[in-house]
Length: 262
Image (tube, rainbow, N blue to C red; front, top):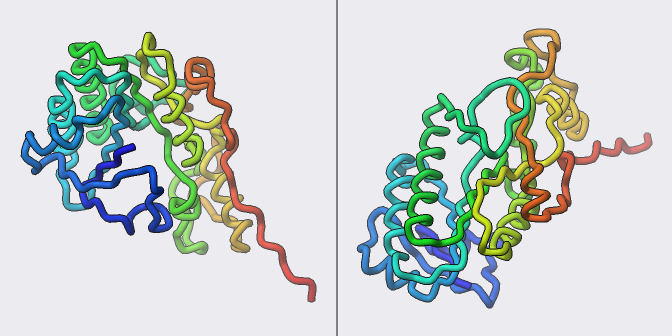
């Protein structure tokens, strides 16, 4: 297995350890010569493309031009599968359920870039007759991306709004399982697949659970609770097409701290 990242730094790997069966190399998609990208990918038989912009990078350039350069470099390879990890930000914001085949595009600029990148991947793969899957990952959490990062505010300061925005999350381990299932999928299938857990509790409820787990007072909101609103991402295709059984169907919230007996 070959892993390519912009820095190629081994200490950036989880726990600083790269498994022996993985070859890690540096590759800058935006600035590397096209021949370098082609040579690096020559042994590839399948691709999992995970693009994430750093603070100093141009998001549109990386997601579109970087992805395009990567795919062009693979032209002529007999790839058995291309998996592109997108985001549920590629879906529009509206109240209620939303599925994998939603035709409407988001208004948010970041979501528009994600949708444009999806279109790019799909068009190039179909032109090359490569089986493709676009995995739209919900908000990613897990080791190194704990849910506590979503709630770091001053506990005494009121949270904005009423906190009744629906949540759409996926644990890191389930996201990895989705990528592996996508690689193993029958090559006759190409599709867009939402990767999200079953839990759409509002932020208000989740923040309260996080506060209890940290031994902090539950947050106060500027407005009283209203009805649940915002998009709720369906995951039926993830379960049916990929056969994925979620390890964390509900948000894996931390257990409350045990108070010592005085």
